[in-house]
Image 1 (cartoon, rainbow, N blue to C red):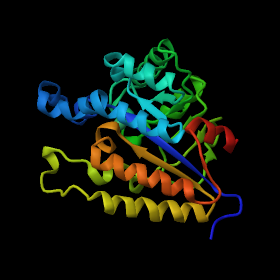
Image 2: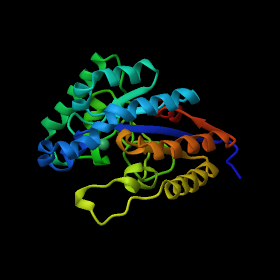
Image 3: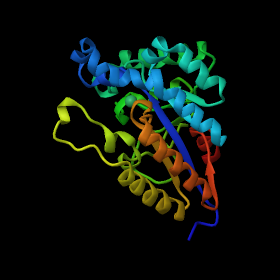
Length: 259
Ligand code: ZN
């Protein structure tokens, strides 16, 4: 049973390549083997994801780390050229809670300028780690951004109190990293089966859909872009599209529709 007004589905990709590993542990900067997991995202996965989205005529939202845009400008240009949305995911992949106000402002303005130079018109922000500092919202507002996609306190978009910024809520269940992330610091953790993740995403999406809410799927090229997971994502997208009353949008469109 679906809400008569339908629901909104927003596929998003955090393009953080090597930077997520360096953010996790700065010592990883000297470990090419560890970093190569992130390189896979830029070298192989982004193109596969763009091909998949193109085949379905779906536009996605890519939150890009500034340093990744510096290292892979052609990938970011291709994302933009194919009509997808590009938004900000920090300059480094450090949590805002570890930065001074000046550092956080510099990360934001530097990445905005860089993405604009590549041809994007970013209006959204996702923090590395979904963490906010006390300065984050004021800085986003000062930069004129329209939306954030970081909080877990709702299943519907809302406007942050005191700021003209729409929140597009996320959740760990709807994040590929929560299910598939694997590192030497999590050696005893088992990597989830794609079928298990498909089941979790399907149930949560159907629940949100029935309530007429917003499903923001958070993925990472280096994680969802593994061949087996792409097949799962492909089938999941088809399932989502088959449900009556689902509007598939970019984050920017969802934020505009929520206003
Ligand atoms: Zn990230």
